Length: 602
Image (tube, rainbow, N blue to C red):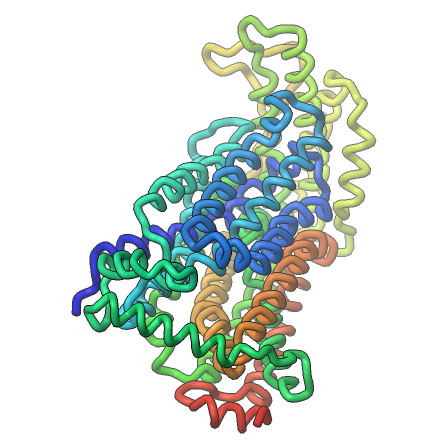
């Protein structure tokens, strides 16, 4: 019997929840620089900002069943759509809760966090309700396909977020780029909300509420395996009665289930300890540390997202042809080798990457200086104070970056010269924040000359030129000696490509390993009467470790350096490999009774 077009359309609409899940997860990756500046964040508070959404995710996943069971699947999906819409608008414009007025940096940041939290609740709820709804509206023959739409859309949403960030960066929208990056999610969120009105309530939920006629009508439109809505309602009733008969709750955390609990905890923890979401959240930041410019740093994650999409599609087609243990073994080898490749590249190319990174920061500051030095027509006194404040900040950023470029150039010849830490950079910026624009311009001009001398001593071509007004522009304080700094490219492109290739291998390893088997494996190691608790344990462990990694990755990245961090991920995956070889049972095509014997449950 053919799959009903109506059922297919409803499943695709429900899968938009997966797309928003993926998009909201990855979109913040392209906004790190701007949000750091706008909300005056350091590495720890930025990590907290990223992780804060995950606290909402944990809450959403844990409580989604309450409105889903009491109000219905469709109303819960509608509430999710509203939360996604609020999150997109609120993160793009956190001031709107204050009537559009800017209440201050701290209040704006708190407002931003609240909307991140709401988006997290929507993500957590989507991870539960969207696939549940898809499973309940689909005939058995199409259930795998319909639920697969949700899984596919998560990956597609991640790719879409990476591409959207890159596309918006190409538009040169100025200092409000980050608002558009967050705000664009309002479009699919609104579409999701409106399209849901054309979908029915889950027939299974209708039966649980005794609404048999409505359930038959819905099943008549969706289609059934038997072709008879009446028979399908009878099957659902029998299933529900069986669940109620066997619904005596058994204690979950007990000696009997110690082994499957251990296995579920381990695979969920390893799923995050590999570093997958560190890459998803911070991919542009990682590429920025290779010295590429900001637009390239936003483009390379698009390639990673596309790799993730292609390999996920391939993995879904073969996941049932290989054993779970085999897939995780191959994935572990891929994790270990890919993270080691990335770490070794960062270690071997460290001096060149440092110069490239500092040089890119100088160029970014120069663009800001040129923008804020331009004298607008009809500028008010208030606007002038704001603009000159921004100009001063840009000059401070450029001076600090010029000093770093000079130091990095010297380190190319003498690696015993210490690299300035982020804490030292912050202290230097604080030291300069009250220096006048005129004095900063003098310091920058001196730093340009010193940096060129240091670069040329290390056989790097560099030059300076006056920052003259472009056609049609009038510069404020044009008498200041503003110098533009240019350095020949020192970023070894082969090193950048190796980092990109290593991360592509990493994503492919995840798609074929942990990403493709984690939830299947967790569902297979628990008996029916405690399977829901087992899935909840796996999900909770997954999201908690996700939040920890999101919080700690960025501060540790700057504290220890990328080479140490990626070697750390590689080392952690050695433990997964050993766990896979010696402790993980094979679950493919193993009966429930046999699995219970293998795990010592019976």
